[in-house]
View 1 (tube, rainbow, N blue to C red):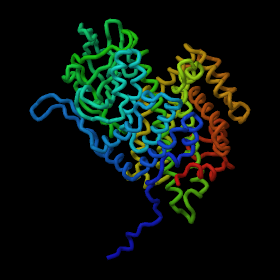
View 2: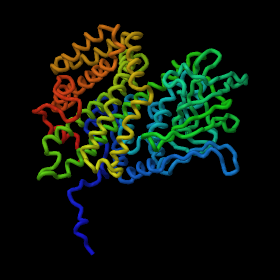
View 3: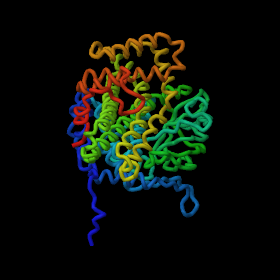
View 4: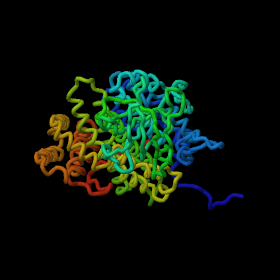
Amino acid sequence: MTWSTHDVFNQAPPLEEYDVFAADAALREAVDREGAAWAQPELGSLGTLAGSASAQELGRLANENRPVLHTHDRYGHRIDVVEYHPAYHELMTTSLAHGLHAGPWADPKAGAHVARAAKVIVWYQVDAGHICPVSMTYAVVPALRHQPDVAAAWEPMINSTTYDPANLPVSQKTGVTCGMALTEKQGGSDVRANTTRAEPSGDVAGTYSLTGHKWFCSAPMSDAFLMLAQAPGGISCFLTPRWSPDGTRNPIRIQRLKDKLGDRSNASSEIELVGASGLLIGEEGRGVRTIIEMVNHTRLDCILGSASIMRQGVAQATWHAAHRRVFGRLLAEQPLMANVLADLAIESEAATASALRLARSYDAPADDEYEHLLQRILTPVVKYWTCKRAPQHAAEALECLGGNGFVEESTLPRLFRQSPVNGVWEGSGNVICLDVLRALSREPDTLDAYWSEVGQAAGADTHLDRAVDDLHVDLGDPETFEPRARSVVERMALAFQASLLVRFAPPAVSDAFCTSRLGGGGGGVFGTLPAGTDTATILRRHTPV
């Protein structure tokens, strides 16, 4: 029997079987501009996979089937094993095969960090959670290099493109992943308040015995973790393998898994260290300085993740509006909806442009002082603003689909739940703003680099010129900077983003961005672009086809 009431019409088809990379003009152009044009073929392959129905199903399954902790086996032996759904392992296999975890270290050619950044933006749109251990594995290498002998032993295993989830000592594995366990329940971001103890073991390997508790340990099935602990010489950094060199399990006990708002495919845990063996990285008493190398790279990935969330929100919202008809016209043709969509699109493009420009600074050789100064100031500046905007962006993208966006099948709820995580991890908003303040006070040349970079767009837009002039005045009064740090850092980020768009984006995009963000032409929510904005051109640029 045919039921006429069950006819389905005026629904957008699923956004699948498309090339995520090819559909993102802003990302393609940034890859070329920032020195990684050579990576376009691989990015196309990864983009085609990311847009496939099969990959999207892997993302769904990995999030619906959360990791499960098994502390003991059936006989009562302590095992501390986290079980993941097979979909999670397939996602990890793809990430490592494409070098998202170590490509720039394994093949450090020009543009390698830019190419990897683009891969993260593309593949993160399938599933964000599994990128956490991928990111930490990528970020651990610069810190390990403070201890050359340890780096020499571990880097070849880290650089392997084979994902090996076996619960075995590293000597029996073809590839490894790494995690991080810094914060404790009494300290949070104040890692110098950590109480975990590290006592020299007195063995020929120079190991330390770590005893304490870590409040957050993401990806607890990683093969090794960077940790901070109080050594005799002060707070120090240690590489703590999950298995000891003699092939026995290192006493790292997983107490529980965190029940998180988002990031559900990935396990985050509390752990207890009961005399766990660790290798000193760097010098005793300089643990924070050592591990900041890792934190800087994971902060870059927080930016990439937020940019990816914005891009996927724009893709879903514009795709829906291009197929849904309301009041006799497509949603995308309705002036007010076009305003909302275009506003979301220019925010996404600004995030992508700034993320890849920042990634280029990570490609710079050691003697390129300008790029390293730029990296120092822009990493926290861009991290603060991009991660702050992601939740607002995800909420508005979801609303563009109406009730359809509020149901799980749309993937927008997962995107929304994920959106705050990058603003929390690796330094929440206040911590990041204080880091900008530290950079300005301790390394004043970073500000000169910032002015030089933004100044490359001088004279191209009156709103931008005025914003830069105002920033010069505000940053000239450092005594009152801390209480107004959020405002100043926001404006630094906007000026930087605007300078990139003015120089490289189509006029429709840059004009809309500068007028609304810098000229007082917009409001506190998306969809308040001024009259006369060329929304049609912006939407053609950003709607998947």
